[in-house]
Length: 456
Ligand SMILES: Nc1ncnc2c1ncn2[C@@H]1O[C@H](COP(=O)(O)OP(=O)(O)OP(=O)(O)O)[C@@H](O)[C@H]1O
Ligand SMILES: [Mg+2]
Image 1 (cartoon, helix red, strand yellow):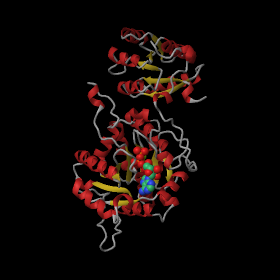
Image 2 (spheres, protein in one colour):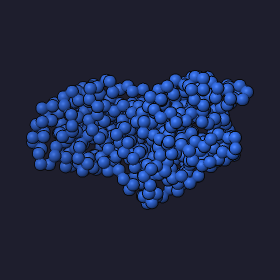
Image 3 (cartoon, helix red, strand yellow):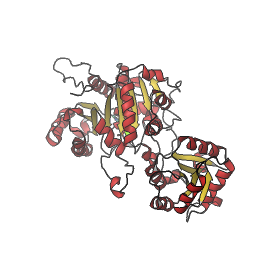
Image 4 (tube, protein in one colour):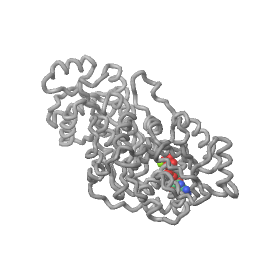
């Protein structure tokens, strides 16, 4: 049965043990249930309900800030609510939840049939929502998700053995650097640059963790030909949020591409963006800094600080992942397309970026898809002059437009180094990566080494 055909359940119960018990009970319950989201707190639950990810929420009485207002928001999202009572304190807890208006209750150790009945009853009583008799009515797809299904493109990368935590532990070191790859709206090549820089750094001997933190359209898994992949970053962030992220946990969520390159894949369903919370990501970066010399992060395009204004309580911000990653990063690669529209967006975006990255030396502009047809003869020079005039910076790198190599990489699910090692785009990215790694490749007269992995 497709996940989308099942009753989508959200859980927001604070004790991890309960959570596990409920999930097991749901799995063996008669009927068709799937846990669409294990929410880490009330804000997460409100986000998931608002995004249409679930039809019913299991909540515990000790969920912080759970009140009538919050329950009202959940009901308006047409999500039923079932209160979950602890073994010892069931009566008082039930009374408290009833006082908030919750009508359906189960003990935390409910048997599967009892749990299933409460869930279906709660859904059936949601005004205007999906009726038990017409279940399943709402699907994740209907909520606008892309589905976690991997792309059809490319040959699958052979499944690696489980990642050995020693892969990480033995790296030692605490001073790994975070490289955020950002670019404005319009697909300028963030993922292309992030995946290829990561592969180049790894091939140069730098232990590298590639992370897809794009909350609008994660695609690293597809680009690398990783099929049937659960979003590793969401898993790592969830564990980090519980304060339990260590090398062993990280090994569960990371995939190995080469001995020096691991990847935490992103949320293919953009509606799951609430899972990538800045506080949890900060903990992920703290760990990846200690297990990899470079953490390369594919960020979303949007730098606006928006949703926080809509509520007076703390709520997830969709762009929070990008903003906090950029603020934490030691190096930011800002990539833009070389055409006039792309350059204009890049120049405006750099203005916003400078507020997040006060150390201008950490900011490196990469102009992608450079070609004569849009920038004239000697396009690098023309673009360099324009960027200097309008943004006050000289690009650190120019990557030529190279559809043959990039299309070949996409359809085979491989990086340029793997399938088009002599292509112009690859050579430009290799050169940039060598400078990022602090390797002095400069022949006399060439650009000075950036050595950006050591921020001045
Ligand atoms: N230098 C290049 N030459 C030719 N094609 C390129 C080049 N760089 C990127 N592309 C192609 O442009 C498309 C968009 O690239 P990419 O997915 O990296 O952009 P993005 O900024 O990550 O976009 P999104 O907003 O989807 O995350 C892809 O098909 C990619 O293969
Ligand atoms: Mg992308």
